[in-house]
Image (cartoon, rainbow, N blue to C red; front, side, top):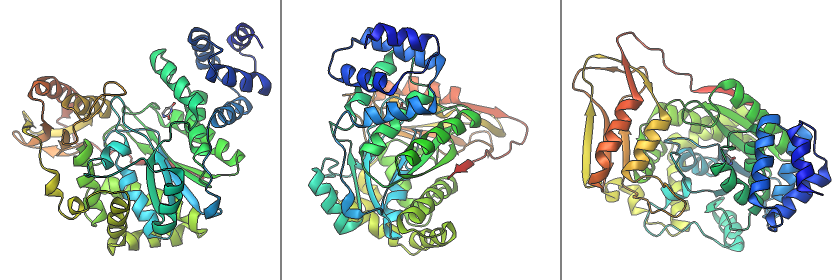
Length: 433
Ligand code: URA
């Protein structure tokens, strides 16, 4: 195989063969293809796309580039959930214990935040002592004991994706459906669960800006999962505005705990219940209706919160913080942004809010940057809410006073007002099973 010929072929929109795809992934992972040639190929894929067959084979080649996790101890009961990335997206913190408390088996590998979107591992590390790095044997053992474990991605899981993602990030080739779907699904398939429920975000704060694009991504990933004998479903949810009110690590943990205690914001609860009921129906092999009843009971009778504490404790976290969230403490500097006149919130740009939270210290600007677990934003008002002049719209938290002016300007630019009443945004666009 000559890489030049493969680039030329894709540049003209031709399909690559299975051998070509496997060869190029192996050669790139082994350092035999230089980044400049792979970049050219990625750009050709960006413009010319890939057929379903090519996308499936690319996913398979990336999955097989490293370790695969053996979850056969759980037969076909293990289930994972994956979000394509959002702002204020703390659903895993609610969904994972909710599913486990409802009889499901949650064995999840998850990532850290980068850029304007957060990561579950960072949120969980708000708990002093919490460890997200268990050995494969410890991971399986914990799932056997508690029906739940959530760990960081092991270093050798789909290494081809790690290399390709880093390259896509700097060559403007991230937002391509075959490339996103193969990237996500190669990791999910390698992580070994028998069922996968995807939360495909749609809107300003996500890669897919419209429901149509999000549907295409969701359908592609569901097809890939099913082709690999994994029961796969996708829920397309709104990411024009952040989910819930809290953005930033310990702030989001507190909000997730509120929901687990039967309170908290409606949008977060609705998305969590929807995802959890599909996961429980897959893991426990029961109907969606029965699963909906189980997860709702587990949430409102307190079993999900108990399971949350058991999980945090099993991974070394200090559960006194779950019982009393004031222990997380508040950041040193707190600033309010207020409405200048009466009116309605027209929009609340999730991407800009995510960037503002990152500036305050809640997110990483580079892979190895430190984060401030207390930093972030509480949105007291969101799209369609009525505000009176002087009402607090957003509250900013940081331990870095120098960050405040930039973050404030970003939040102000994210929120638009109008005199006219605004309809509530659609929360769940579609479910694809
Ligand atoms: N998340 C991933 O893991 N990969 C992508 O390509 C996009 C989002």
